[in-house]
Length: 376
Image (tube, rainbow, N blue to C red; front, side):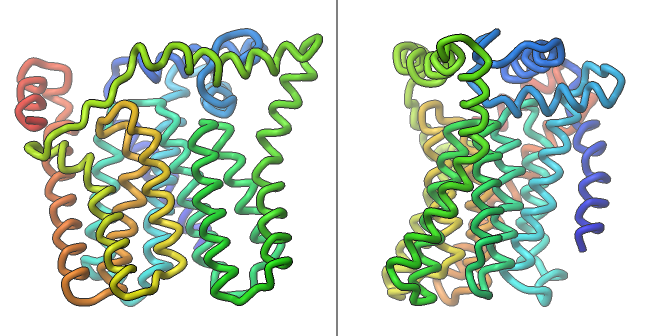
């Protein structure tokens, strides 16, 4: 099975790569490409240049570019690889949640194809949220697969390290993933009737593991400069400067539900509300709903300061997984509603992909005109 996942990931990567535009995006891809070029020359993020993303966002594309003989499209290949990983482990997570008996049914293929179309059609290359999703979904698959047995130290350590890895791409989203998994573990330990002392010890192991990679990076920044200036530079880049300046450039335009994109932007909140209402009425919630609900809402915080499709994509994809699981695991009104939402999302992704994946019209006036009409 692992070989099959690897083979599909390798096969999807060039497909997604070829679906991208040949033009360089000034933001975020231009920033990532510049940072990758600098780290390949020995520069260190936060110390030698300003960086509002984690080090892995620069070192990964730099490594891929080096393997490709200095190919300037290292960022694009890294971006395509990360999207492919997300699609594959979205499918793996869904399969683990709903069972093999649904593999040939719409409950599996409809959401999987929708996510593939969405990720392939988003032309915002190099965006670190794609990396964060490529870490979250293997984490989710790992947790789902190991939930039935006794909660082992190995599981706590691996899930914690994956949260720390996410933080190395984007610090805030890594923290959100840590909180989501932390909530999941609290629920899991309660269902298994762990004693309070045992629960706290397990949460401590997970938290220490999650902090390991970020702490190692911060220690490296501190040790690489005199008087810990590197750590001070990190604090300035990630905390001080954003607090002082981000509010000047960002706002909270909440879109109306009068457009396709407007519906998609609110879909994570609609899905979350559906699961919450169902849980209150049934007086129970599965541990997997807890994990996906927490991830959906926490990742939504990332996009809340600048509401748009690309900024909430890390919340949207877990929401689709949650809807698919809800559709299979519930009955009645909730099952019907979740199914209708999945059908609506498939229609939307087909509509977006029909326009955006047509290479002949990309970056031409007809394409831009059609794109504007679609988004209205």
